[in-house]
Figure (tube, each protein chain N blue to C red):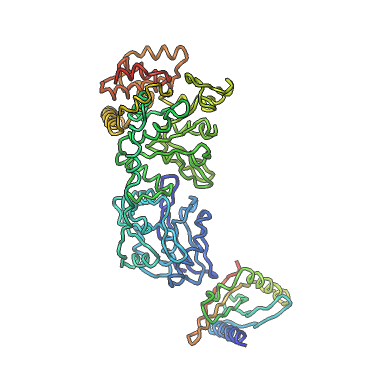
Length: 121
Length: 516
């Protein structure tokens, strides 16, 4: 399906973007009864932080920037998911953060990745 | 994160305060936040600015846009910050060199299609900007005429967002003056309302003339149909043109009230005649958070006419007391105190009773004595005490038709005498900073100027309780105006006598016949 291809491609680009910056991917598309976290990753050492990423991908700007689609409801869901994931871990995680990544895949153009850090406040 | 700033003006009363509009881009998900005590209309700038920028294909930053209006503690109202907000955001997005914004104020409301709409209070805002040292202003193209009234500013009129971008990038658009308003409506009105239309009523015309010459408050009292309203409407025509500073004050208030100033500065004294159903806020000024000027401020340096004065709610009438004395009104709100000038000349008209015939010879009054009294009491003592001239108009006698045939004086003739009397007053009072007898404070009247001859008349009136202490000052002011109209150096005993009679609303038969 077209829609599925877009978001799969978008998430792949987002992961590549993070890996290129030295991040370590912990999980992708982690699911529970509440929903799904797109990417869970560690930022590079030192001061490594665990980051929960929401990825939003769009193929055009007709309905606005991909990041504009990340509403406060989605962020609230992301925070709940993050707490659920943390609860399932055997070890204690001292610091975590919520990020948003927007991926724009224009037809025939170069994809653009925009990464906003610390959107949870 | 990139930041930039642009400047606009917040209005508190007729005073303007420079507001720094800062924009920061970045640091969060795409949305726009406006901080700095913005009211509802200003908060909605968020949606207007974004839509306007999108409609012109300029591209709004897909990041967190924070707009801060500084000083942050000053409450800001109105839609005229739109241009400054858009400009600061575009500057933060590095669309042009932000150095041009350093001595520029921007005022204008944006439409969703990128049009720039007219705003209230442009004139006072620009005056404040000049005082604060700004040299350039960007205003709505439709208000170019109003903006050009302010000296010392380079003004750019912009019709839409693309014009604004052109100005900011140093390629100003062609300046098109809005069309001249069609044939001065105000001037036409002044000539149609001529004093010659009022038949007879010589005494009342004399009272109006004195009121015009000295800017005295006037109370016209009489049965229906004798010409109270006709006379009051003709008073503004007798007043001389406003001088430069008065004209600026009056125009600033009109601009604030949202009235267009296409014809240039207002030079004729304004005239306001609110209907008696008017609310307190509409008369003295008011409104939530930011108080707007009311009728008394719109009549600043002009005439406020309250026809059928007893029909006004007592609250409205009593609210006039303080402005009548101080010439200004202070509207207190939780966040700000707005001060509006309100130096108006009050003209009241009233019937003697509900049916209107009480005290009229030959007419039948059907009202109970208590009803007549209650009607008269609706205008309270303190208000009446502040009115200088009380005049009772009698119905026309059988000489009505004869009088109607003989032509009376024209507005122009009477205005000439008024102008001469005003010139005498200005000459005498200019060193103290007053223009007319009506505005000289009581102590100055008694110390700085010679007392009229025969002041024992006043002592007598005070001792038998027919004149209040304020009344004494009023009578002395009136006597000066009467002397000025007569061309006398100093009020004589006769002038004082006439003044006392006018103040107390006694018949002026002899006085007028002497003059005729």
